[in-house]
Length: 248
Length: 251
Image (cartoon, rainbow over all chains, first blue to last red; front, side, top):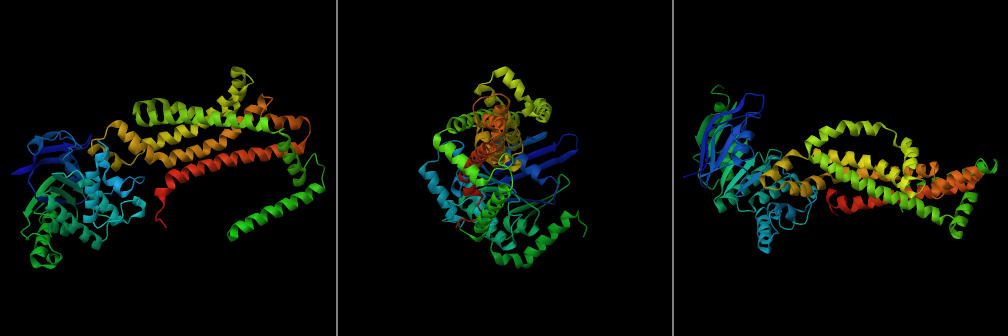
């Protein structure tokens, strides 16, 4: 059953040609899909459309059978930069989505603390973002996206600025949390290995079109050793070729 | 006390000693010695001669700062928030920035009389612009990704302003306040130069008329202290509001 449905979507910024052409895609409930592409291919635009930050010129986008007309409260967002508010502590940052709507209840605070624990940040709740490392900031940003227990999670290259080891740790944390809550995920990246490791299905985007789609047959939950298995490398290689339009 | 502050104090002592020596060779009318100035200052303070003047100038500075900054901040927020207003008024703001505002002081004396009002208006006008410009810029150039976050979270325009744009712009707004505080003293003193019988600026003019150079120096020291006090007050505010979260690591 499809949870997020993107149908025949076309979008263009003013005075430029279409950035996205005829995008067709659906993500079943609880699945983790990655959108892969070089920078400037329109993948962030597609994410903004899917999340309701932009509205398509043509075509429709539906989330849980409801047409998307704006940002939905049942979705979580993680941006390229952690975008934490420097004047709020880690805890206050995580509770931000709630405190914009109402006063956070003790249960909300408990859940936020639980998320911090899951993210390996117990004891950091009163630290300000500047006092946290890059990886810790990204963890807080993910916890903030999860505080409203979203059914759908949108992530836009959230780990692009992190070192390889921290990135691997965060990938595992993210997978575990999404598995736990049966969250549907749309994840954007330019890192092929990251896409293959994380997702159930990878779509490759080039010049505003989806050019290639592939299922990832690796068993779940994913483990670090899988990164060095031949199937993993072969999958990466075939996607690499698809990104170049079939040429080596 | 660390080493540099010891040297700094030593330098002060050296300078004062040099001054005292040079002043000894000259007429008191040209350059009074530090000891003479200190005597005048202490005597004036003890006898209460300076008190009404200090109070008057402080009141002008504080009132001018308050009105100038409040109005500058409010208009800055509105212009930073509403594109059409900013585009409409920005050329005029630039033009009015170029007007030497102190040159308008005689006009304000003409309009508002020799009392306190004219000085408060001059001070307010001088403080208005740095606050306006810094606030407007800070509000207008808020980080795009953070704005997107607030949009995605369904924040209202008011929430975005009060919980994102103003706190994010606080460092810029406070540096505007820092400039305004220093300018405020200049505004009040110049206002008193032009028309006034009370206040430290008027006292400087009076001491010029009486050829009482030690008095003039004593007043200059008082003005410096007033400016430094206000400047430190802004620093204190900055520490309270910003330093807690701008420090990289807490010790």
